[in-house]
Length: 255
Ligand code: BV8
Ligand code: ZN
Image (cartoon, rainbow, N blue to C red):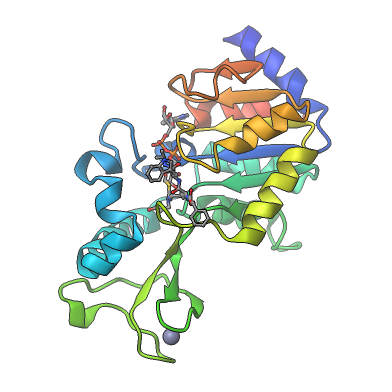
């Protein structure tokens, strides 16, 4: 393990444009349930049932019950040492965070690590949206929303104060396209990267999982930190099988 860490540090420390791609595993040590691991979200629910536009059309109450529960669970979670190490590395410059997560923990870590100076720096690109934003199904209006969701009946579901239509979680569901400008920016970062760190993703969901392949195709070495092997492991120059919260502080520290 020591040898892997040293080799990974060498690959990352000289990077002037490091792409950091994260998935649910980076938040596991914060207590946020992952999708596909033991006790993961998909164990109790199938993605097709809940994280699709059709599911929302068919049963908006059930979908909001699930997202309302996830928002409550995540609201009690704090960034872990992996989020903080990634935020410090992004704030030092020359590194960009792109996340599949919708839990907002990278943003919280960046704001807390940045302190009073320039609070907007080191923020992640959120490929799949956020649990703490809603979007109107009628007029498309987006707004921040951290409140409790009353999904006890269709009548109590959140509605747009401007047009009265049903609000939905502002996340990207399966079968939905990612925001074009977010996707474009993510692939630009991947093409410009001179190194890529992938943390806590099973590498199954596209187009996110194609980002490390794009970076690698452009000549960037890939370092993976993940408990289990993934389809990205064979692209990685170094693959470290250890918890992100334990590895990242040392992997990304400046000294
Ligand atoms: C698109 C937001 C086209 C919502 C998410 C067949 C049918 C339908 C679709 C498809 C299909 N085949 C392919 C597709 C495309 C589909 C896709 O990729 N499906 C996969 C499952 C096969 N993709 C899409 O539908 C995308 N859109 O293609 O649109 C299009 C284009 C233009 C116009 C119209 C349409 C949209 C994908 C986004 C879906 N939304 N989330 C929500 O969160 O509720 S995806 C969801 O999965 C989360 O975002 C999550 O982040 C993501 C990936 O999961 P991971 O983050 O990797 O988490 P996971 O639990 O899987 O893995 C965790 C890993 O961490 C594990 O490996 C574990 O070992 C490790 N770990 C655990 N603990 C730790 C750790 N590692 C380190 N330390 C630890 N402590
Ligand atoms: Zn509206």
